[in-house]
Structure formats: C-alpha cells, structure tokens
Length: 91
Image 1 (tube, one colour):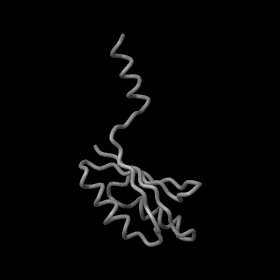
Image 2 (cartoon, rainbow, N blue to C red; image 1 turned 45 degrees about the vertical axis):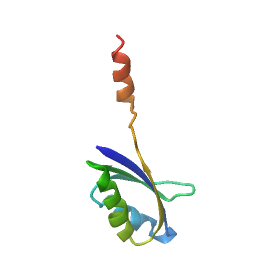
Image 3 (cartoon, rainbow, N blue to C red; image 1 turned 90 degrees about the horizontal axis):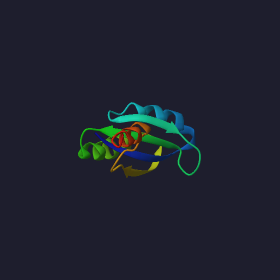
C-alpha cells in the first residue's frame, strides 16, 4: 500500500462540497477540514505508486472549487503499533 497526503486550497464557499467530492474519489481514504494556509487535507491510500498520479491529476483536478494542491508522497508509515512491535523484538 502506498500513501500520500494532499494539501488542498479551495474556494471558501466551495470547501464543504469540495471535501465531499474529494472523499468520494477512489483511493482517497479520508478528508480533513483544517485551519491555516490549506483548507483540506486528503489522505490517499492506493496499491501502486502510479495510482497516486491518477487520483491527483485526474480525480482531484475534476473537483470544482479546488484552487491548488500540494502532494506529499509517503516513503514510510510510522504508527504506535509499529513502535510497539519494534520494541517486542528485543524482549
């Protein structure tokens, strides 16, 4: 599984609609409404690297009201479960 975080700036009046549309795109796991420089954060989880490009350039590009995106591709995922497993190796 490959993951990416997509930061999204949207037209103010379209933020709720854009969030719902983004959430409906195949490969988008979650969408968060956030404060600050960006309006939405989408978490993309897909089986292959190439699918990230499809989700962003084909899926997100069709959502009305999105002004700009910035995609961060994840190299490695760290979670509490991963940390617990790592320490179990030394017991």
